[in-house]
Amino acid sequence: MIKVIGFYSTEFGEIWDKSLTALIADATLGALADAKIEKEKIDAVFFANMLSGVLENNLMLPARISEVLGTHKPVFRTEAACASGAIAFHLAKNWLMANPGKTALVVGAEKLTDYSPEEVTAGLAAAASGEEQAAGLTFPGLYAMMAQVYMQKYKYTEENLAYVSHKNHYHGTLNPKAHFRRPVTIDQVLKSAYVAYPLKVLDSSPISDGASAVIVTSDESLAKRSSHAVSVLASETATDSISLKGRTRLDGIEATQIAADLAFSAAKLGRGDIDVAEVHDSFSIAELFAMEDLGFWKKGSAGSQIRDLATMIGKGGKLTVNTSGGLKAGGHPVGATGVKQIGEIYLQLTNQADRRQLKKVKYGLTHNVGGSGGVAVVTILGT
Amino acid sequence: MISPTKIWRRQKTTVKQLGLTGTVVTWTKIFVPSSEYTSLAPFTVVLVELENKDKAFGQLVDFDIKDLKIGMRVKSVLRRVREVEREDVIPYGIKFRPTSA
Image 1 (spheres, rainbow over the protein chains, first blue to last red):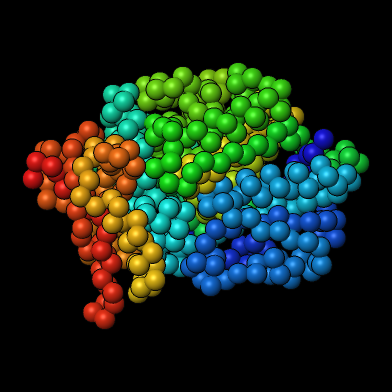
Image 2 (image 1 turned 90 degrees about the vertical axis):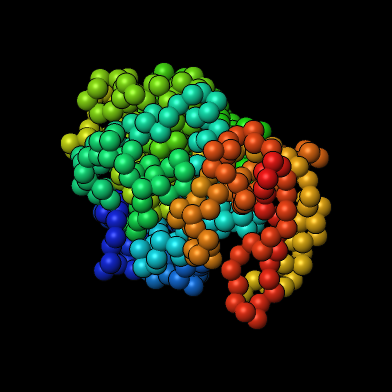
């Protein structure tokens, strides 16, 4: 059984004084310290990042990580836009299954705030098709187009979406590493400026810097010595066309459904077993899609169910969602996000989540999406 | 600048989508654009199912806001699609206008 034995994340936000490499170093050394192991113990590194090549002409990061760790061990880089982090974790898990007795570092990082919103928006649009880009569509624009279909089909308004941001911002107030640690009301969300109609600033995850790392091992004696180990029960991924043109439906993300079915089947668990989940709320609409496509809520019902706020901390629901603040309030340093989601579930399952700690959590799930739904990764962890 | 080769390559498909009618599948209005489209913002983009069952993206032009909805009938027209420098090849592509206009 593959186990997660350590996690560390930098603060997410505008971190002016740290370069991409410095963020990677902080996360890496923090995770090693958390797992109480020496860097020599790392047999391979899986690194996730999206935009360093596009924005800052900074590539060959495996060799920079070699410098940080002082190692000659293999370092692999993954890129799947916003799903880069969970894909790195997925590959690490597969590598460990093929290599018993080994230990891997998974680190995701992104440096975005050195650039203007227009430059970052253009960079992120690289995860859309050429035709979508040529029409002037942005990333929020693609989710906005899907939101329009969903809202018209199931008769919801912008207010239904706003509850996602309200909930996740409350969770952000409980997470000292969240990009935003202030609550927002439904009214504030509704009065914020449009980014791409019907999505507004407060429906959208921010542009953040940050890095997160986890230590994963197939070394049973090392896992046994760890005071905080959780099992990786499943990590499954599925793909779809890069363009919305090629999708069979626009009121959700089919790749999520496929990855979720595979993951629940591999973990031999049902939807009702999950106590805590970190889902990909890059935009408010995306959390509604996630709840339906992961199979937690019936298709078309998320817009009304979210209004009960049953997935909010302190509401006593069986399933609590995005305790870290999600991407919305927690922040979204693209390559780091999927790794942070796994780290948040790790903290919850090992009772280390401080003020946002849930009671009696046994199974947790993460859901990470790349592009407008072209890649989805679902990971299930258990104690 | 955009490579003239890329413009030439894209026009091979653009020409096949020209002058076709279709139906708006979904739409959005972009308020925060990518850097190349700043001078055009805000602008409306539609995803259209064409009469030949192909789908195409394009900006919507020459329309009345009260007519803008999913299911609206539109026709593809040739328009300049981005801002370029004086010496660059002008990139033409598909935009859509209402069939009623």
